[in-house]
Amino acid sequence: MCELLAMSANVPTDICFSFSGLLRRGGDTGPHRDGWGLTFYEGKGCRSFKDPEPSYQSRIAKLLEQYPIKSEIVIGHIRQANRGGVRLENTHPFERELGGRMWTFAHNGQLSNYKDLPLGCFQPVGNTDSEFAFCYLMGRLKQRYANGPRDPAAFARFVAKQADMFRAKGVYNMLLSNGRWLFAYCSTKLHWITRRAPFGTATLLDNDWEIDFAKETTPNDVVSVVATQPLTKDEDWHVMSPGQWVLFKEGEVIASN
Amino acid sequence: MCELLAMSANVPTDICFSFSGLLRRGGDTGPHRDGWGLTFYEGKGCRSFKDPEPSYQSRIAKLLEQYPIKSEIVIGHIRQANRGGVRLENTHPFERELGGRMWTFAHNGQLSNYKDLPLGCFQPVGNTDSEFAFCYLMGRLKQRYANGPRDPAAFARFVAKQADMFRAKGVYNMLLSNGRWLFAYCSTKLHWITRRAPFGTATLLDNDWEIDFAKETTPNDVVSVVATQPLTKDEDWHVMSPGQWVLFKEGEVIASN
Image 1 (cartoon, chains in turn blue, green):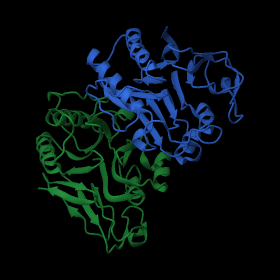
Image 2 (cartoon, chains in turn cyan, yellow):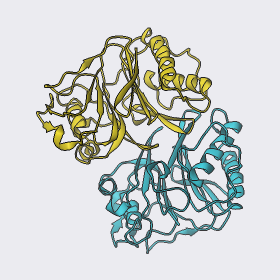
Image 3 (tube, one colour):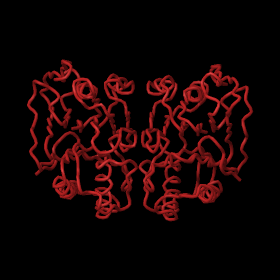
Image 4 (tube, helix red, strand yellow):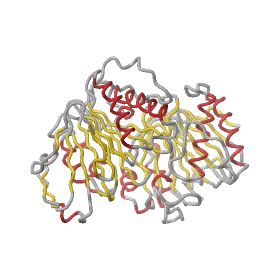
């Protein structure tokens, strides 16, 4: 089981606190030793940091834990390999361009009987079930929205339909973003939380770091975080059930089922 | 004028030495204050590090200068913005997938009268002439090689033909790689060098770092470096002339005009 992490915010926000919790699961408090990746959107641009090294040993991860990159959307993943070797090309998040936006995808789970699905324009570089599923999804999106989707709710329903199909082929917890929207789909395990004023304090489950969000934010900030398992011990996370999905924009839920 | 940097090697090799020289040109010894990026291929996988910050101030650049990522192909770029604002989405190298490989592109120069060129499958995310030219090139490559090119010399001639067309529209020094081949095209200024046994020493022009390659390599290593301007003061770099191109594979020149 891999660990997923995502953030959607209405102002550029750093993810150091949440990433710090996740990092410990990468081979220290967790078994996820097979690489990690983090994609930051800054406006329309995005940059990904990836390492096939365990995250708790990675010098790049260490830098990112301390270096506050301010971002509106983040997608992160810590890998425990099942399908596909431990190599850079198999390290999430995966990226493809559609309609002049970079799309980013991370998956937790395992799929069977997927290789006969017809791929369109997009081909996998590595050999994971995850990247295959992403390429299939992007091909379907391109078929339907040649220049990229415009209506977020219709887009989310379309992606959820593909996700239901993959859930029938195994386990398919997933995150998808184009830098504007963040889509999260639960197949077996996924949690989310929205933080807004009045902000309180929270303590990480994995390394006891306590943060006072009131000191780090302004009263208008709205920040949602999605994670495989709750990252903090003193907040109420929404527990998603199998087949549930949520679409975030600027920190707020704008559609769900 | 931006600075280009690339490497092709027959064994995974780090680029710390060359990158260290280039870094100083990013706002310190040079005027290139508008971001930088570096893409490392490791097998079929690749990872890019990008920053819209000047490279000589960038904490990520500082890490990469000291952290020896071993790679067979590297493409790097330090930007002095002309067309397109200083934003992450305008920061080179640019990436797109074709035929199950990630393709990476960096450009130095400025183009005019290019916006009417028909784009195919690939759309720019930012608003630089460089990314537009890359998307056009990738569209042409996809048209001709739906599953990616197989014959390196034919591929290089095809890309050179597109490059000649862009050179007629301005300045178009460029680097392109799919992780197997490295293509370099000179429009106004580009240099390259191949290092092989017997290895000697070299001293960086920009910060006086001297390296003894004999200590860093094995006798079978072959490493080629491409740069806008020579990076070292005690080696003979090949000076490319306008319209010249070189294709490298595993450190060796495998085609040129």
